View 1 (cartoon, rainbow, N blue to C red):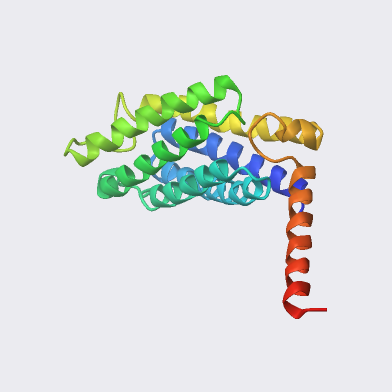
View 2 (cartoon, rainbow, N blue to C red; view 1 turned 90 degrees about the vertical axis):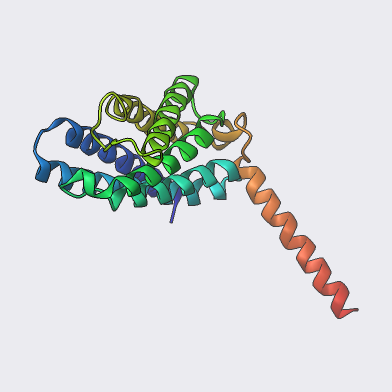
Length: 210
């Protein structure tokens, strides 16, 4: 799959997940909330899975790992999107813990702007606290106040920031995209592949002999 479709699909998935997630949190209808969260989770799982592959190919292994953990966490939360939120509190607690871990990992990478990283750290800390409360026996579901309800706006801002970073990345040249983020540029990745292929070819010739 080429780079452009990955960015477009991932950006769309992040924004759809953000909009449907916030809508489900605000609209006071259980059936609508369940459907909105389910579709939003599907979009976020698709986006984070594609971004795992995308950043891994760019040499951003830690960023790729962050999105992989996020995809797993979102899948766990997906299983708790039922109409009765109190039926799946343990699953929600496990999912929020993985959310916190993945968002913290991603927010520590300088591939994202400072503002997005700050909202990510606030989101990660909030979800970590929610997970601790759930696993220590407190009655906290997905709409409990103050947390996690008031963490969702920061979560939404982080998702929008990730999408904006993707679009901004696509607008720049390959060297500008990854030159200052700790990841490999496109040219560096191709050079590395060529070098590995050359070494492998030399090794085969050495083994086979003249």
